[in-house]
Length: 421
Image (cartoon, rainbow, N blue to C red; front, top):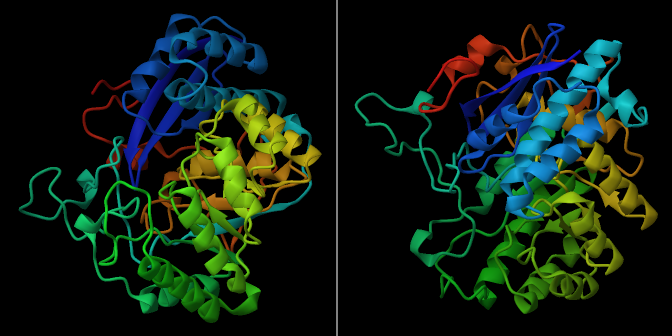
């Protein structure tokens, strides 16, 4: 069996969902997904220069070839997004060829269903970001009379602190959303607390005022009251703050027994992250902006993290993700993978989570995307039910992309598999 071609399509959802399709001369097609990035599809298509003619079952060797080809991008970034999408598609092919689910090639499953934590943002509905993190209105959500790209009432995604974007923050919105998700059966939820507010004084200095910390802790308190002790609660800060104020926030949240506080400071400085982790009883999670096992090794060996949160659509592939989880297991650290992908990437991550002994919970970021489940060909019930994904025993990933539905929500200006832009 040989690879014949590699194609891409982009679905415009809350983020760009970049789908990878790898075809073979045996007629087996593999599906994968790559974490979004500007110009990503062009990078993936460059792999057609050397992957066609290769045996798709040589997954690890081909991943190494792709890493070598991406040498000009260094040891992180968009090249690893591209590799991750193709590597997942190769595993899908291997599973289909052997009539086995992907988790069997990652060590076999520890669990029959994978626990999901829902990312509830800031108590509001859908927001959509472009590949350069600008708020946008997807083409399918355009209101009549509006021009392409003009914003509708979709909530803009904020990445914290800008007083210029301050808006009213209502604890009741958080609590209402939390109660609704609890009713749906989720046992773990995550909310954003890096919310622009009237108390922000500076757009750039990574500092929090006392009033901002009080507001954030108040939101967490409202959530804990709404959820009770039965539902685990995590909060996200999107790398916005400095060490001292991150510690103040983490300590202010200690009475609420968080599952974790995520990305309180930027990801580059491991020693700075260690200072935050050591200074609070609130567990600190990070990892979605780290690549390959080499970057995670430093986090683990310096005791800079309590919970590891790799993104399997960007770390370099599912096998690399398993290696990262194994390293975390050596340190008795749990893994809670970051995931903002479509059903394809979500199910791929679920296979790895099923095969990971130190797995905690997998993120689901698409609660507000109305067509999420429609993208799964032939599926009648939701992919996620009562806060869990059932691990399929079907070959490969066990799901197929419904290309007709995907075409409806495609991103204009991008090729849709064999159809040019």
